[in-house]
Amino acid sequence: MVEVAKIFEWTTIIGASALFIVLSIISATILLQINNPVQATTNNDFVTIKVVGHQFYWEFIYPNGTSKTSLVIKANQMYLLEITSADVIHSFFIPELGLKQDAYPNYYTRMWLNITSPGIYHVYCTEYCGTGHHTMLSEIEVIS
Ligand SMILES: [Cu+2]
Image (cartoon, rainbow, N blue to C red; front, side, top):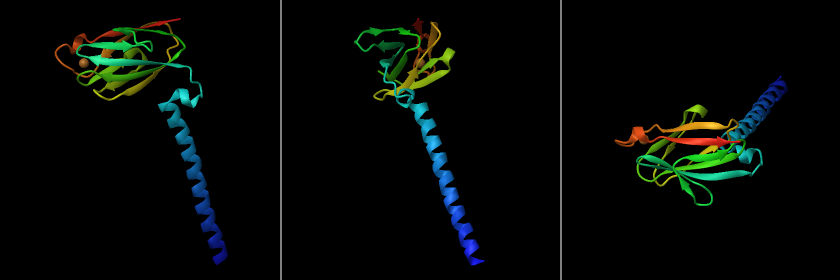
């Protein structure tokens, strides 16, 4: 009887441990895809664009150093937006895509973007940043 109890005990411990390990691997895989879709797909074909919040406009800096107040990007291309602020806290919001990311001074936050439908997408600031906050509008034009 003691032997059966020992076998049952060890089976439970090993079974629970195996289940825990499998669930951990599944969770880690999904979290990696959420945080870094490019790395997860082992596809390094992406373009990095810096987004800088200013009182009261958005600045987009392309890889070649060109600076614009609106963004023109290609459809079906992966982009990494590195978002920061030159002054106070802002929040970069694209309502059509349901994407929002805060912009902090001296700190970079990231947003992955791969838009499949060409068109105009609006950009808002959704963190009150001063008296001109309501004028802090921009556009992303997605071309095919
Ligand atoms: Cu604002």
